[in-house]
Length: 95
Image (cartoon, rainbow, N blue to C red; front, side, top):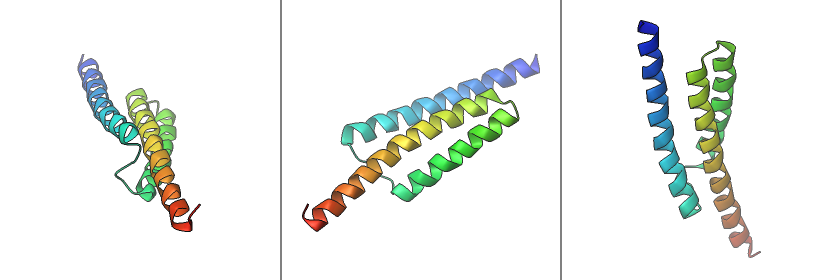
């Protein structure tokens, strides 16, 4: 019975974190820019991808779900951060 409570606790924690990140991603998409540096988003994407692989290797689906959400949302942030940076470079060059 303890494993059931632990599992439910893990799932609830993962869902709450995913919902929080979802709100942040919505704001990034709405503003069409990420408040974070692209370096952070890039490292977060790679780190999350590695943690997905690890969590699948140890057969931990809650951890895999949480890191999958983190990966997708970090990639959204990276997209908008890169887009903002490229726009600034184009403006600087006068393109």
